[in-house]
Length: 271
Ligand SMILES: NC(=O)C1=CN([C@@H]2O[C@H](COP(=O)(O)OP(=O)(O)OC[C@H]3O[C@@H](n4cnc5c(N)ncnc54)[C@H](OP(=O)(O)O)[C@@H]3O)[C@@H](O)[C@H]2O)C=CC1
Ligand SMILES: O=C(O)[C@@H]1CCC=N1
Picture 1 (cartoon, rainbow, N blue to C red):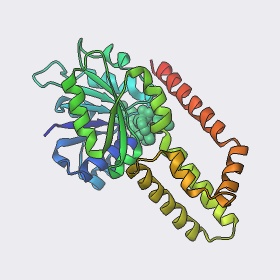
Picture 2 (picture 1 turned 120 degrees about the vertical axis):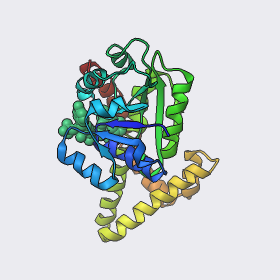
Picture 3 (picture 1 turned 90 degrees about the vertical axis):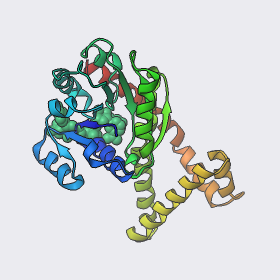
């Protein structure tokens, strides 16, 4: 099997490890480099994965996944680049860092070294992620296919041109957080109407799960599914009117603009 080194065992690194193991990936083919010692120990005891240094992890891996914060990419990459990347083994770097361009990696790696940039999201923890791939200058079809094969075990995979990845980050990378915020708001509103928090949470969570399943399985657009809930002159129409009056759509347009701009900014400051 393809040996994968995950550099950075934070939230997204953990989601990837957990998702791969859950999908049946062999634990012996995964290795983690995490500089925070107690965190490394936690990952080793939770998942049974080997934790080691960046040098050792990179040396023996087919695919080196960088899952550190954009500001830590430079340091981590310097460590990776110290290992024998020109050796017998054909290797590939996969970056999960928001905003950081593939050119940044390519400039620090041996000439022609393949890099694939990916924007994943945390639902990959439960096999329902979406990972968006963009190849760097030297990544060939077989490299993209390898990354697609690995990430398709933890959700859907889409490929775009690299100049779209900051927009992708705003939509699906950060997307789960918007969803959780809406869930929180609906629970709070239910409690405001007199439901217990327990009942409100159960109702909102199942409403989201059911609505998500409908979106996934139906051929109808989100608007058509919404029309089916909206009886003429009824409760939904009254609620949607308030959401529109309060600028729900404009809030999302602004929010995603801000996320995209922030991704671009992080890419520059990580240079
Ligand atoms: N969280 C998410 O939903 C998503 C995150 N991403 C991207 O994933 C990357 C990681 O994000 P996230 O997991 O949230 O961040 P975290 O801070 O949770 O994780 C990063 C981890 O990497 C560790 N680390 C930093 N430098 C090194 C190093 N040199 N060697 C080994 N480990 C190191 C950090 O340790 P320490 O804390 O000690 O610094 C930390 O544990 C970011 O670039 C982000 O843009 C992409 C998509 C979604
Ligand atoms: O908030 C962030 O910067 C990262 C990138 C996408 C999701 N989390």
